[in-house]
Length: 268
Image (cartoon, helix red, strand yellow):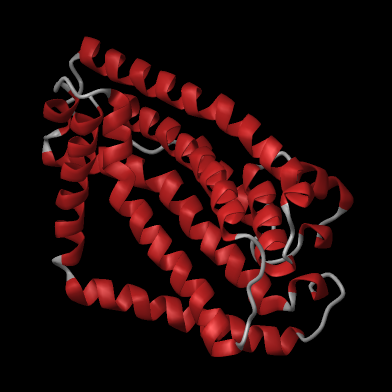
């Protein structure tokens, strides 16, 4: 069973990687755009200078670099599976994929594995460029950071699967999903500390999983925090994941069954 599951995921990975790497110019331009963005953040950090809210993180550049690295996972988790479903719809292959004996969970994982590998590369480039080019020191336990990142990504991916459920049924994106994404970017502390928000918006920000993911990763990587310092973030993200993962798979299963019952899998 395990070998078959790995073979399925590998098949999805090879397919998607082959398609992505066949466009070499686009691949190179995407890497270059990351470096340009890090450079822009550096000059912005020079303009901002020292600020009490940013001093615990070593300044604006390391703060924003971690934010952008997490956003790459957020966007991937939120969009990759929905985009994969939409592509299969337009190519007319969605019904063939969903009618195979492959479990829905394997299709979900396989369809997004390349996108998450690319998100990992993007995050590494963001942090490495900020560290090497602009002398930013990373501290803390990398394994602890990885655990927190995995929990955060699981929640992001679950939201993406729910968004894909809307695409299966309604053949277009989920407007609620776009709203959640915009609010997360606005209130999650990506480009500025949550403490810069009005008090009532700060309360709203802590209803969002991205806030806990960013807080925990910045504490670990930039402040050298240990497990005892970030266990509240780990606990909250575990709760989010425990609810969102089974809920997303349930929603997608229901969406596929409804589309099969209505005979609309081939429609787009």
